[in-house]
Amino acid sequence: MFPEIIYERPDLENSLPKPVSLSNQPFSYNNLPSPRRFEELLYGIFNLKIQLKILEDFDDINLMSGVRDKGRDCNLIKGGRSYGLIQCKQYAKNYAKNDLGPEIVRFVLYSLADRDNNLVADYDDFTYYIAVSTGFTDDCLAFIDDFSNNITKEAKLNEWIDKNLEMPTLLSLKDNFDYDHFKSLLSKIKVKKIIPQDLDNYLNHIGFTHLISVFFEVRKVVDNSAVENLISTIKNGNNTYSPQKLLDQLNLGSARLQSEKILFKI
Image 1 (cartoon, rainbow, N blue to C red):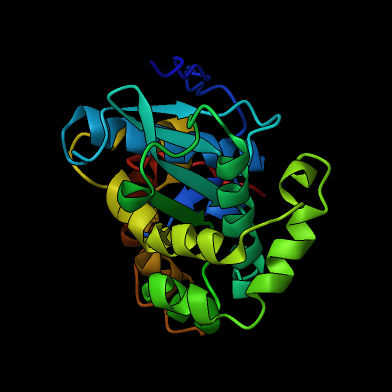
Image 2: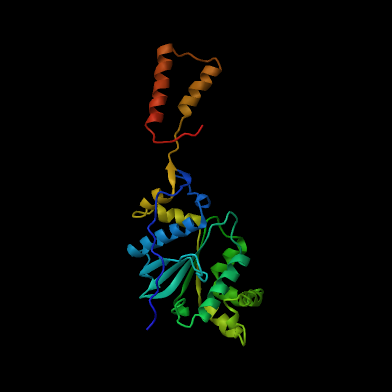
């Protein structure tokens, strides 16, 4: 009998600071107030995907507390056991292979140290999602796309292993460490990337749009070209409007602006 996995199930508050996003434009994930908020966004999206049966590989998800999470931000569950995870990176720069490789190695090392098999129920059926707020470097994209083959050929793999084994929480694995066995397990993990365009698609999907107002303040873009043209005409001395016609045009522009729910900052 495996121990019950208990983590956080947060209520996603909508009272926290929200970055401004313009309608019909990509969402500004790097402007979310904290990496934790980015993790909560991924939790909210995947929780809905599971509830709506869009993602049928899992039946539950939990958000880690952020303390001693052993390389997981969200834990993906099936039948009470862990069959996947989501690791979230709110980075302004593109995420590189030399960032991702040691992260995955560290997680699999933790899974070996976990004698109760709470971290990985089945190496042959485990998915490691890596979600980023900006993007991936080209070498990282290639690394992910054929991870099973690339990881076993990676020149820095032993370096990544040895460096992680120096961590106090993993020192117990160091003596008589079986590199070949570890690499065999590591190559079985499926790695999938989540980029900002994927997040945009999720949020704009039917059934998900209510999450937008929880995390973002969306403002409409107003086309004020008619008012700008009128101002330009007056400035250039080409005004052929009568005073009444000029007033009507200005009132029309004002009415259009008032019809839009938008906040202006001076």
